[in-house]
Image (cartoon, rainbow, N blue to C red; front, side):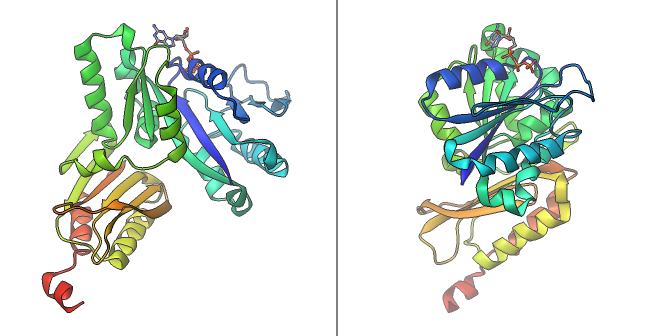
Length: 316
Ligand SMILES: Nc1nc2c(ncn2[C@@H]2O[C@H](COP(=O)(O)OP(=O)(O)OP(=O)(O)O)[C@@H](O)[C@H]2O)c(=O)[nH]1
């Protein structure tokens, strides 16, 4: 399966700067899909240029008016998949990541060929008030990795504040501070490719509930070991209940009778789980839910119900 990565970020945050650096720094064969809003001209060809490396989708935003064209483009790429190591989609600054992710996940054929791997969001540190508004807030909430860019334009206090504001909204996201999106590319690439939960960061979180605009990030923890069956059901039920209003969830779980941590991730309705590193004495389960109008008490009750009671543990 070909990994697909999404590069989002508000207008002028530094997406193109990042893409240029990335393309210059790698030998990989990358198919880049660029979505430019440009001047809207419905008579113009939607796909204005297609060769092995770059496809431009214009005439609208791929997250809304031309989502269908994105899907068609993936069908075309699937036909010649062996030519690419990965696909990167650079969105318009106003794109909402959800419909773009869904283009792949909700299409059975595309799901067999492509795997949404990670979402990188470039954030302009000097424009945090603007970033935390509408699409900017969604892009931060969905991100696996954030380049906190334009740090040359802010004081160290403003930078700390920007980090805090991002973490309120997405407590587990990995943040890399950059000027002209320049950073440790090996680190960026590894994070970007693996799309894995930052276990250490996740396990150190304390229970909180933060609201930023209409979004809420809730962190819950459980000391007792959890039942795998109940946890899986709990996560599925929550995702089904909130549908598109649940943006992201990440959890690191201490399961009953398992030596390794169980890691669960979801984006909208789509959930994946895997075993990770060994558990240590005193490790707890930590869940982070990010979405709209979340009911903290109900989420906490659901988690509590996954705990294995002491008498159950002895009898098993
Ligand atoms: N001062 C400063 N300027 C930067 C930095 N990173 C990028 N820029 C400048 O910001 C402007 C916008 O950068 P782009 O990479 O085009 O941003 P973008 O997100 O692709 O912009 P859109 O395509 O309009 O959404 C350019 O003039 C960059 O040179 C930075 O760290 N500091």
